View 1 (cartoon, rainbow, N blue to C red):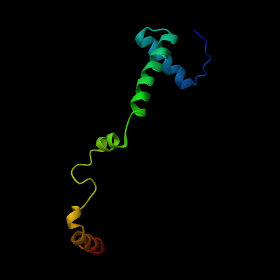
View 2 (cartoon, one colour; view 1 turned 120 degrees about the vertical axis):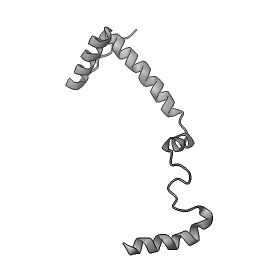
View 3 (cartoon, rainbow, N blue to C red; view 1 turned 90 degrees about the vertical axis):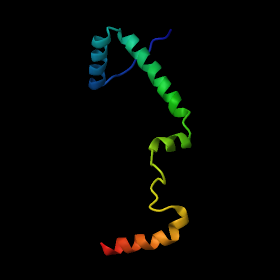
Length: 86
């Protein structure tokens, strides 16, 4: 086991103290628990694929498309006309 020195700003000190009072854990135990939780989070983020990120966006059917691809040529004229009516 090794000893580490960590510098905390005032806000981090307050958070640490609140966590200690809330949980009854020691400073060392609170920091170890935090590291463990952060490791799990970092591993989940590292394993994300572009597709998994895309699925989380939940754009719905067609995403941002204003018309299906098969009707794109006819839809673009309508879109331009609507834009210029403003």
